[in-house]
Length: 394
Image (cartoon, rainbow, N blue to C red; front, side):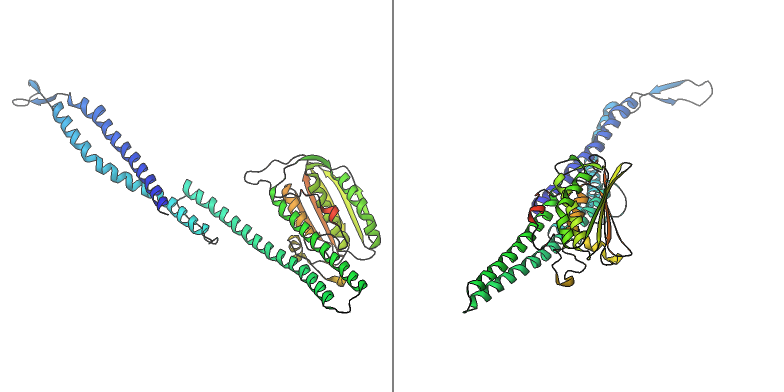
């Protein structure tokens, strides 16, 4: 803290000296280029009685030595005046900067709710203050989301661990346990371990999406959808879901694995949250400078005020419907992260007859980054398809 005060005072001292030097230079300029030339002008004084034809004589004005002596005294007196004015002006201009520094120090100590609120007048320093206020607001939102995510992740990880521990304790505490009982307990333990492994993989995928898209390749959404649908048809047939597609070329640019995970999560979500005899329709199309992927599915009716919540991590509309495990509530959160990483547009609407219609619009080619936008999320581990197991998607 002391070093910061010294640095601040040093800056004020330098500014005060700079202002004083300017004032002193202006005084010297006046003496050299204005007062000295005036000293050579001879003053005219009339003699005798004034008349229109009177003869006048010239007498000397202020002598040059007198002028130089007076100017030297004035310049000496100007030194403390210039320093005082410079110190006052520097302190006035540094006052918002001191407020910024003090508030930023408080915020860095843990009070993320504080803001600068510099107000008027609007100048470069107040604009800096407004920019920092926006930055602090984003940091607060980010930290709050991180704390919320960690709390939910801890809860989700603790549940299978507790189940696994209880399963093993019951098996070990049974004195009459035979080989078949222990084998069954081991199989259940493996199932819980697989469940936990897939949860960790999903959490890792969502966490690594914050690193940003580093690979931009040209790809056709229609080809990506074809590959994902081919690997999901057996699952859809077993659950009585009809898969339909209407695919036209839709060329865009992005991370192929990331976009494939977006398509996979959308289709898995449409199959999982459906009903027997339902349907899923996937379309790709190009419209102007945009390419669009749309996934429409039947299913239970979803209130409009619940749609946005589904795109947050660990949020499920009916997590235990019909006693089934319906994933972890991470699938649509990954879809949202991938969409933001590619600066695409995500549109979701609830169908009156039940189910959802989700459209993701990408730009042709690599999108130009807006100032301050940056690339925020990506999916680069490519483990989604390998991680699918008996508990479904994420």
